[in-house]
Each structure stands twice: as structure tokens, then as C-alpha cells.
Length: 157
View (cartoon, rainbow, N blue to C red):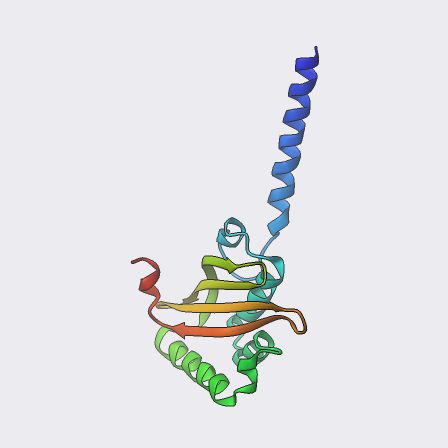
């Protein structure tokens, strides 16, 4: 009789764990795959990426970059910001509007520094985004590096 009770508890616990994990990710706002759950992407980074790519999908490119780079050293470098915005405009001209994104890889160095590799999903061809996030003790989550280009095939090689 004790074995039946233990089995029942294990089954119920398993069902509970499965339901909790299924609900943790929730419905993402942009067209993402479930890789961000597999890679254990922290919620604050996931939210920042969702907001950024939602702005890009809505063609609010400057706002998206400004919000992504709040408190970032990059936002204080007008030339860097303008260059990212310019390259984004070129890629949209070449590859069409951005329709969403997918997480390709996620790595951490300690608990404060993270690198996220992303495919930007354009109409004709994907682009490569690599963003480094730092959990600054004073500024909170900031972007410390942005790499953006059309060499997305490197993710397959």
C-alpha cells in the first residue's frame, strides 16, 4: 500500500513539474522559437530582446535601439549608435522587413555577463545579431557589445 502512495505522489509531482515548466516561458510576443527556454535565457534578457525585436517588427528602429541601449556605453557613442542604425537600414533594404527573431546560442561568464547569439528573421535572408549583456551593480542590465551583420551562415558552420 505504501508503494501505491509513493507512486501516486511521484506521478502527481511529475505532472506538477511539467505544468510549471510549460507555463514559465509563456507566449513570447515576437516570433521566437523555444530555444530561449532550452538555453535558460534569463527573463530580463528575454524581455529586453522581445521588446527590441517587437520595435523592429513595428519599424520603430531608432526607438528599439535607444531602449535596448539604455545606460549602455554604446548609447553615449553617437558614431556607434548611428552606425548600427545605418547597417540596420541597409539590411532592411536588402533583405526585407524584420519579422521576428530566434535565439541561436546563449553563454554566460559568471552570473553577471551574458552573450546571446540571435537570428534576425527578415523576409529574404536572416541576419546575425550578437549581444553582450552585463548585470551592472550600479546600472542594472545593460548591453555592452552589439555585433550585427549578414553572416548568419556562420551559425551553421
